[in-house]
Image 1 (cartoon, one colour):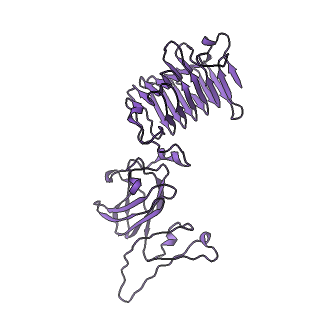
Image 2 (cartoon, one colour):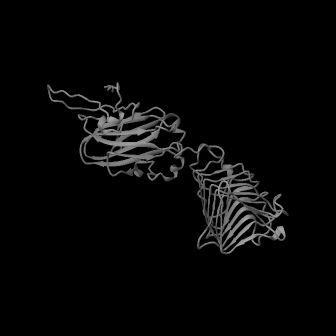
Image 3 (tube, one colour):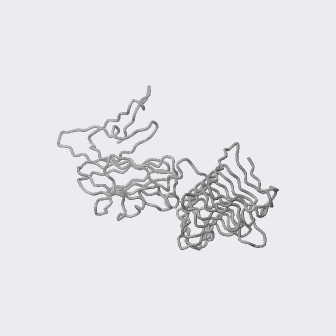
Length: 397
């Protein structure tokens, strides 16, 4: 469906003072455009003047006329009781004349949520997306802000912004231009290169850590939800409720180290398995006592699991996971998994570990005290789900 401005193109904006519900589909999108539908600055676009809105699968284009507040494709002002939401849409081909400051999306004193939306070819030397005012709060996720003539994102007047999991690149001047006292939170985005150039940013911008590839793999964005950070030092070690548990966490940014603290009530052997399967990381896992003395360490190959183990007595211990080799200078936006087990070396170790077919498990070295004349053995078994006809299990040690 196409909605075209009529009745004098340059001053004929769509004003919203109630609610605008424009929800299209992939096969039936909605387009808001000028009466002639031929090029930029042909109409003032959509003005949310205290009114709320929901745009989905919508294209707004060819704006740049004066709507009474800004030269833009979309203006949002005085929307605080609810919000304007833009999803799976496109804001494109806007610029004004006579050297006026212009915008793809202009937000003042309002709340807005933008997701999966493209901002392209907006402005002359101005802004694809601009937010101003201390009451302004905007969230942008999984969107693309690219090939705009001026700044990608502009912030001023105390506006607050969170930009996540988006591509912001190839804009004409700065990717983010901030004059607000509140720095925008622009972490976990792709800036066209890794690391991004400091010249991409004006003013204070939180952009570290950044995404290291333009390919967003499954699970990529869970990185922003690493509940164990910050835990880079012994003093910041994340307390764990106990052993016999598995967690998923991330090594990011480059050179990151994760430390965990656990209190054990019984003596036995502590087994720490750090699994990098599915990531490019080569992991090192280390065990420390309460005084931060190294007890055991092990280093694995890229994309593989590695195990460190040590005999322990009741007390406080630390587990440290970090990258080695290229992993020390790289990072992964897919998680590693850490399994902690407290085991008796005289029992069947494999039965206490979740096993997978075709995998090799290194259970490290165990100290076993035997009285004269005694003996011990280790047995490898597998659950029925891993047992196949003709299959066998080899135990090295």
